[in-house]
Length: 423
Image 1: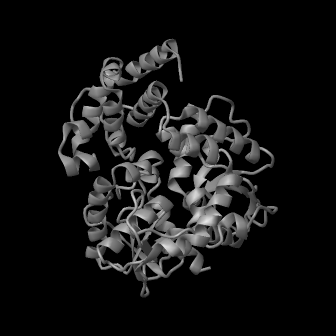
Image 2: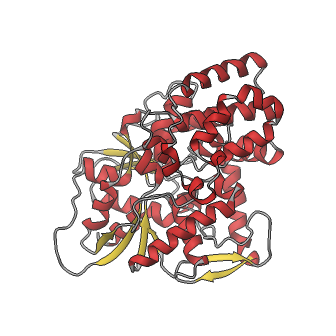
């Protein structure tokens, strides 16, 4: 726990970041949470007003302040559209770190952030055991989407329709890889991320197939750690730095041109948050060379949309918030989707919007997450597209849950899976 002097310094840094906010309320029109609740405390402006008095509020009722700050998806939509350029995500992450330092972690949080995430071998063993016995506790919900639901109501799962843990995680199918560059003369480091590794290994396999097809060398070291976003979002900055240090050591052991991930959240975390919140040098990991796989395929390899006007299957594409808002990557995923000649992209009827996942937000505020996500499911159905695609495994989980609960049997795929089919 930080001492009083350290907390005071953190609060002063926070005050400096808050000075740009003019309380104009533009964020009201952007916030998906406010759109559902209509509460000023749920919109960015309301939270910033709360944070501006954090030194007072933290002494009155710190638990209530923490709960209000956690009612944020960290989707970045407000920041991307703020006319004053307020660094909202930075402010919220720092405020959560201050509150975590003041309140401390629960036993469950200590177990997850300090024991499991920082010891992937132990976590992998526990998850492998869970994969063996999950069938006893779950039943099929939607065969087309591939979702299940709990046989018995539990506080964590509740009435979710979820994707099961993979029978064989990616790290078991492909423990590591170290291949030279082919005709592309490029070699990449590959960071699949936790959700791809343990729930959607088919996405990781599709990415590897695509890179091999384009004659790209691959360095994928074994024993990779979480990118750290769960720890950072919870305000646990020390665990975050430990995870970054361990990953930097792994990826600094070889030469490569770009580090790629098939996860929008991992990409945004490594590129934007590692340099800001990690306490040590990133060594040879250059953040400008961190890319989403689709961005690498289009911007570096020159993959182009198919110009053939023949019959194609329509695909609804959902923009992950971390790609759209944080990295401004929107055209590249669509280009990759249409590059194989089999698919045409259908846009959301009301424009791009958050699916309501938000990582830990989904765990703490599932009803709100569900209210936002079900509207997204109905938007998908309204287009008539037989397939939904996205670039983020967390969004895949949310879309699958919401479509399944709405009884809309439309499969959810990662765009790399669809592109890999055409190769």
